[in-house]
Image 1 (cartoon, rainbow, N blue to C red):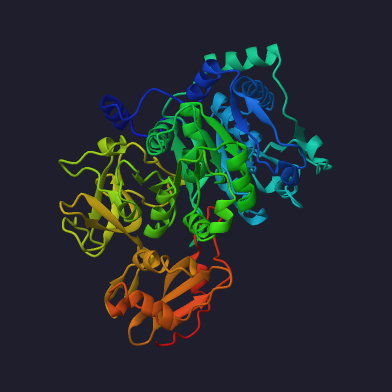
Image 2: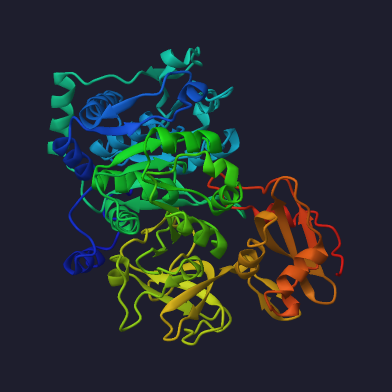
Length: 574
């Protein structure tokens, strides 16, 4: 990387810091403050199934023990000649070592580019070339495969790649491929500590430095590299501290891959801010997830909406699971079903509704914002409306617009879908290589998501769907999110996606793709009778119902509607 400092414009930095929206903090400072404050307190816990994943027993480290290993790894990066602004590619499952790689790199100003474990040679090598990896770090084995061999074999096709590093190869018991060097976690010695401290003192991090290059999902095209700095990451993390009201007394269970906004901002950064206990989980496995909640006395976690709905529908499983310490759960990435949010609230567990993107657009509906669970499932605050305040500092620093997709003019009245545009301190500075045009002429991020203004004073936002997912039937716009929320309330439905089927006369008709609870059945007539009972307009009724065993999803859990649209059968009329 040639550009690693000063990514946000200097005038913007001065303005936001003067307003208190950005600070002089860096992420490594948050980490070191926790090490100093609680060295003997448990900091991080491995996945319970680590032995199956990585071939070595799960561990738990205090902040002091964690710092011993982080410092040793930072010294190793220094030995390898990795310099400030160079990019370290990383493909690791949620584990203590994943956390250590982030922290060790950030101590030295090395940029981390994380990738999901699902990525294979095509994705990994392509990203390595675009981001100009100086080094790549992964596992000697992950189940029955490892990307290390692929990267080492293709090193000549990645200009500038000097090192391929295997984490924990001894415990994994795997022979290393040619060109791969080992790293076994261990405590730093005195000389390593002094060397890392000297490098930091001579070349300290600055808030506007590049910290990560994450990657968009790439469901419609090649993924774009999302550049993030200390400034915007720290600003974003306040939402995931204040929304669930995290403190150092919490025990947080992380099931989201720590490779993008979901895992980094939902868990990694709030953990560093509060000093709570971080418990890792990977890959998502419901029995293991529930066992960890009970065994680790989890107070807070995150889960996909479909997981939460499935759990509610399995009363027997819930009744024999100890959830007595769990007080709140964050969810998002898809519209929440009011019945799901209500059902968990009746069990004494508040669901927090998050909307976010890798680029840093964030909105949240907390229990404090919306005590009524049905409102919390459906609405987000419309930040910036005069006369309304919200508990999270997002309400003070974030401003939104809803823009007509045809005219580009601002919408001010309820009922008309428009593109959500966001401006504020949580936003990224841009894509790697200047790809795309993410901002409009006023500096607002063009999210590509459709919302409607709602509320008696226009103080709320209602999610409609992605612009490209909108179904247009006979000139009438149909919100997938609205129908997904309604159909998701059907007792037989666990998961649902609404797509448009091509139609010769109407342009498109509605297709409902569903996953059912075990043993349940559902017909098109039954689902439409259910929807008619909700008193919806008849043009929104599905013309086709497709039942699947599971939904196709990308590595971050979002439904791949592009895959659902492939080879769709001719719609049948009800």
